[in-house]
Every structure is written in structure tokens, then in C-alpha cells.
Length: 190
Figure 1 (cartoon, rainbow, N blue to C red):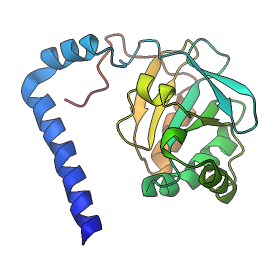
Figure 2: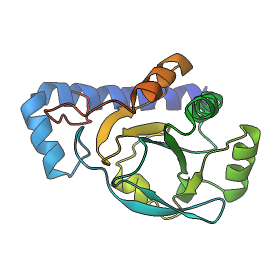
Figure 3: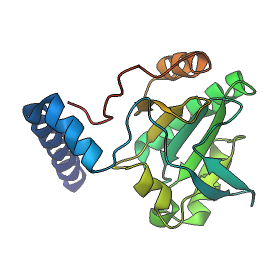
């Protein structure tokens, strides 16, 4: 009962935010996004260096050899568990064509649970630790899982929330040839 009440509260909150943004209209949403330094399609994403579970440093953002998918997740997140096998399959299929970094919001998670999650889903791609919440803040993470599809020039192509494997597969496959839209749009839903 308590779990259902929490889910209902979250759903109502998200619906309220969506309605508010819709009522404000696209011009005011764009202005608000600019004022708050929100991420926008076609614009560079924040450049941050995070340490991986393997002890290496990894750079989010900036120019690179391959498109990048950044997936923010947490071990306590049920949709993250549902999405994890699909992420692994997509990475295995497109390894060498895309990079995939799984950024754990470690500030709100336990390192033991992170390691257990990674082992359970057999992640073979880099798992990064956002222990201070800097990346989550810079990328404006409101909920997990949230993924960002970034082109070779370090520009945002798309923000992705939980998708069925087939959709995630299509987006990953097309990312190497995709260009951002000419007119940048806010990642906020209007």
C-alpha cells in the first residue's frame, strides 16, 4: 500500500511538471532552459572526469573517436534492473562502433551493491562512479535510469529514458551517422 502511494505521488509530480511546462509554451521553456544552463540537443555536453570501478579515469563529453552513450543508474532502481540486460546486449552488438559508460549515482548508492549489480548483469563496458554527484548535477539527472546519446563532437543527440531493447538497439545503431538537429531544442518535455 505504501509503495503504491509513493508511486502515485511520483507519477502526479511528473505529470504536474509536464503540464506546467506545456502551459508555459516552447518559447518560455527554451528561455528557462537557457537560464538554468540545461542541456540542449545539438549543444556540447558537460565535460567531467570520473573514476571507473576498474580504477581508470574516464571523460564524459568532448570530442572522441566514437559516439558515446552515457547511462545514469542506481542499484536500488527497479527500471535500471529491467534495462540492464538490454544495455549489455546493445553494447556487445555495437562494441567498437560506440562507447557506453554506465555512471552509477554512487552518492545515493552503496559500492557493494554497485559491484553486485555489475556482476549480476555481466557489464563488460566501463562502470563509472559519481561519488560526489557532480556528473548527475551537471547532466541534470532528475531520475534514473536516464541515458544520453552523444555524437563524436561531444554534442547531445538525444536524452533517453527506459526503452525496450529494440528501440535502444535502433538508436545505438544509428548514432554513428546521426547529426544533431540544426535547431537545438531543450531536453525539457514541452
